[in-house]
Amino acid sequence: MKAKDPQTRRQRLLRFLQGGRPAWKDADHPELANGAAAWVRTLRQESEKRALSTDKLEDNLEKQEPRVKAQIRKSSEEYRRGEKRDAGAFLTELRRKPSRPNTKRKTQT
Image (tube, rainbow, N blue to C red; front, side, top):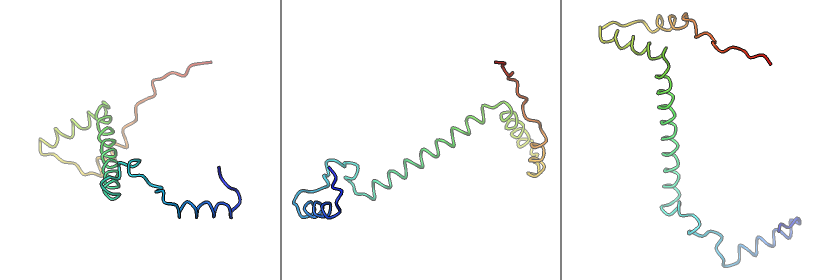
């Protein structure tokens, strides 16, 4: 039950703060047993792991694309033969290649 009157809210808050009951119970927050800094560090590490796993997932999905697989294979073969290309020329070549045509047909409704 919330008091709308600011004076009443203030009085309730003062009674609560002056009372002997703790507002925070350690049992309700076991994640903070080792301290807030350790908890924050754990959260950050979990976030970094998720970001890394997302990058790996994207890499694996790209590797499944036939066009990407062909580029990787070609590049690996050239590298083994000691060949190398200028990065600018390579990017120009990639931009010149047409994208895959849309093979899906539009359905009429």
